[in-house]
Length: 178
Image 1 (cartoon, rainbow, N blue to C red):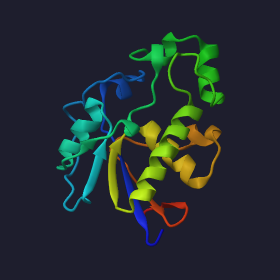
Image 2 (cartoon, helix red, strand yellow):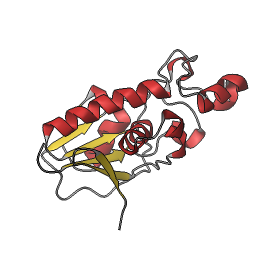
Image 3 (cartoon, rainbow, N blue to C red):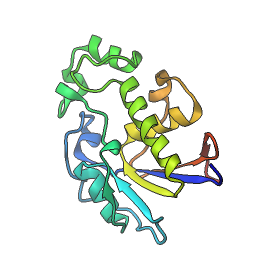
């Protein structure tokens, strides 16, 4: 493939679950969260299907097509619950074993594989893409781009509203801000 494909990932804004340390469900952004609209978005703008991703795209002033590949990590039975309510041994397993899916949802290994497949489609499309999504999807994309194992997933800190840029030139690279 000739040329470079740019992928900008924007993490959704602040939600009540983020603030309270709960596993998210399909919830809205907090009314107090604001972001500066984009002035020149690319032609391809996608977002996850959850309300928090759709609303973040709206606040960015972009018309986004919902892409199920950008959905959040499925927390299964833990949706809406705080970490302190869960059995400590399960939380420990979830944070240390990337294959753990004892909550009935998606493991870290599964989300990294899903996002890697989505990124292959982006690379094949050969067009710049802006994707409004979730911290878990951004973590998975960075781990995949760097060839890091799924165990590196939790080492990527993704703040609300942050932007991460990746380039594809035969392989993915991470672009750090200047």
